[in-house]
Length: 597
Ligand SMILES: [Fe+2]
Picture 1 (cartoon, rainbow, N blue to C red):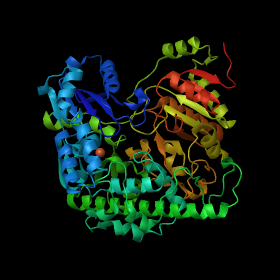
Picture 2: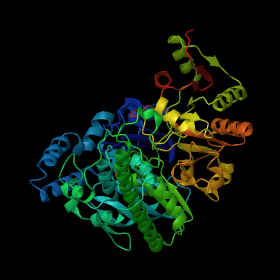
Picture 3: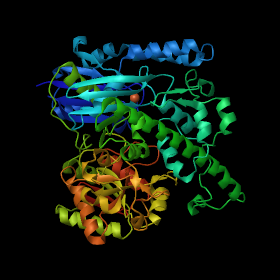
Picture 4: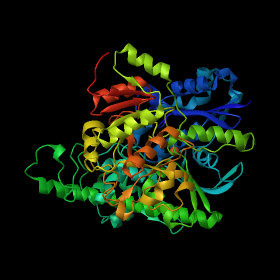
């Protein structure tokens, strides 16, 4: 048996993954254990979990694969700060302190932490890890490849071709020219946290009109072959540790948005839960409209770039299938357009498309490409995390004197949840192994009735405490997708299983599904299949039988700013501290008002 542990860390989203003879045993992000969102430190907890689940010790590992080459990355930091010195002195100093610590000596660190000898430690390159994380998890024998992110060692985007166990990256774009960093600059400008708020920009975009596309084009020169170059006069990420855009950028787009300002537009109206209407509501609405227009413009240009690169990938490889990874591949609106507007017939996108996914990519790259072992694994689902059994759940509930019901009969359990959903209740739903990647896919989810328009506000205000402009996602039975969404042959599309496509909600169904239909008539759907998530499937199926609509509203089981829950304890606390009505942990049901035993 060959055991390979993949690791990614020290940038964002540290993660570990364990392969046994090329089959994935476990894959988890460190944040789920440390409860530190986007934790990037050495993923000791994630590694310990993988080894525990695999029933092995670190000494049993045949190889440890790291997702990038630290020396190359250090070289990039060093060279780019030298080119921009003295402006870069702060970034230079920070890089020196942190890189001359652990980051540069990963091999030594892995040796020290895991007791694995240096000969067993392998390194992949950042974008090769992204590429491998998509292609080697896909069912495709051959495919074109696109990886697009902020930056790896030097590469920020690559175009390649893969066949069987071989991946070749044919073209690349290098730092500082980066779609990911361009998008992040707007994320910061619009008042959101970089590497976290990109989803918010995407959610805000449909409230605006892309009237600043010409201005965005001033920042980036885009070739017809999808190549691009940023005009670095507008940016500061190449010399500053905390600023991504500079004063010239502000001259072009005006002052940045106040992160604390409430977002609403004349079209969205002023939501009641913002409290009393301020006197200058019209003026504030206009101000917000300006920012929504900027969000719409950067989203439009990003889609244009992604479409051009994808078209080029098709031209160069002639493949009908495309594999994607890298943080920008989480832009589900752009993904939906690639499927619709390029000749590619099928896409596979790694669900952990960000840097966490590099852990799986590095391990698979080592197994197939370095060791030359044949393929035999397809990532059919994203349930690779920790599971908490009935004993553990019951022990927690008893220890804490929490009143519960145990519904062993699954029909009864499902019936109860369907009843509560129909009554307009909001359900915390924790089942089986938690998800790999940033999306909750029915194992650590908050569920509600998508037919009720008020659910959008209710879940935002009472439970998620998050921005009102962000849409909620629908989970829908795979066989019934085409009744509600414009996604032909929905069953064959892997990215839809991972909530990575935004598509149109059919026009005559938008009124039926108001809580999951975004302001532009789209939805970020998740297709649910019986084989991969039988219990969640049955729940949606039963909800469909009761209401005629086999769709539920699904949002991640966490409070704003916190990682998605893992354990029964975390699920219970999130439930208790929020306005959720019912908590389902495995077959245990807890309802509010809470009573003690
Ligand atoms: Fe990356």
